Image 1 (cartoon, rainbow, N blue to C red):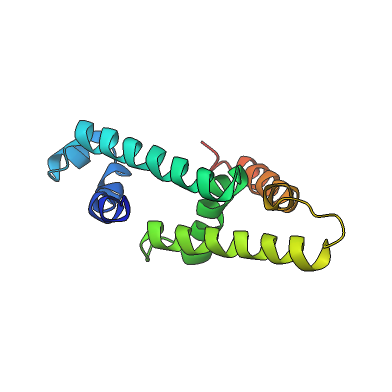
Image 2 (image 1 turned 120 degrees about the vertical axis):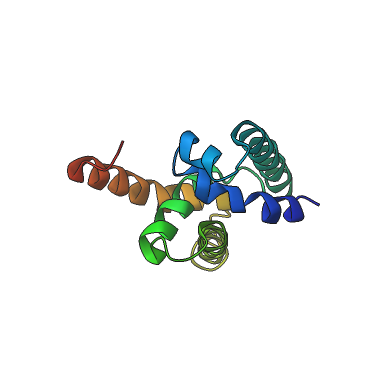
Length: 132
């Protein structure tokens, strides 16, 4: 239901990264784009959480890993989605195969595995001065 909206609104993400004046000059309706992207993102997060449970870590780490793996040459939305799917798949496999006796939810497994990666990326970005 929201996938067509994501595909249509995804083209504005590149211009919004350039800043408001440049995005406006390129013809992007900045205010409308932000509201539409926000509503779509909240809807997707709500559907995903209701279906899979609270796997909050994936939303934080998948775009960071995808950006470092693919660079800026490929569409960030597609690469982030594939990276997030792979993270959830690996977490599910670990929780089902390796930790079969513990029966931990996938959200716990992805959080335990992903928190050190997220902290490492934050520390690395802070050391290089690209953390914002």
